[in-house]
Length: 299
Image 1: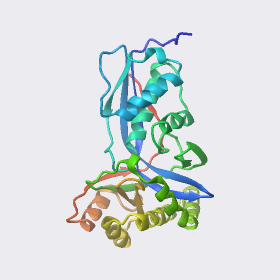
Image 2: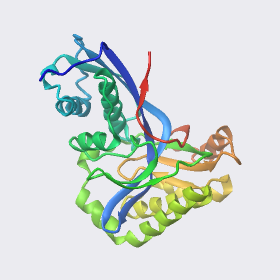
Image 3: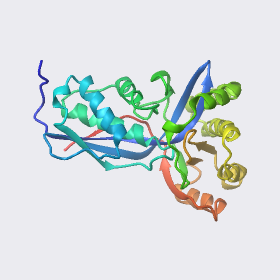
């Protein structure tokens, strides 16, 4: 049966990235994470009947496009639908850039076809390419990023800001030794469960101090696996600069220094972190914690 299209020749959508994870590790025998979703986005545009070629370097998105056409029953349009990336996140640092690219692409493709697509469907397609993040869900959630299953939706925090610390080093997520990392997480499962209890309570009660403590526990667990001088300098200076904690990309290189925006504005937070990391070869920028989900761009 032929796939019927709305009279739409192109469509655009956004998906936010993350500043690593608030927590990641083993909880009740499952490897899970809670993405720290931020207000920085990937934007994808899809075209029907265009001569434009998909960017060769975006092979993960090209693979997702093939899978999505099959998902929508539109395999006959292969070669007739292509895309371009209009806005991007830094790659290989732990900002969920590939997840954001894929989710934005799928959202735009659904709009092109006059369809909707749920987070669970995005997860299934994304996981066929590589392990994914949970930034395409509207709420924060406890997410099994290897199986694509959500276990618990969590409130999105208000007034949580951060200074993102972006080192020059990149990490190829497909090269991560997942078995070795899982064994490490298993050693610290009790601590991870403690961190999650703090996070859950903090989000439910609006207590950002608890959110910061949870992030710091999870980051410290990862520090036992992969040492970083940046984490050491930041964690020692938290009280001095009035920060709540440090998040990190567990399979990337970036960090986030968390602040309560009711007490410290982002400009002042950036200044304080810059002073702590003076002399380090890093890029600093600011962000706010937000809810996730794909946003279709109208017009």
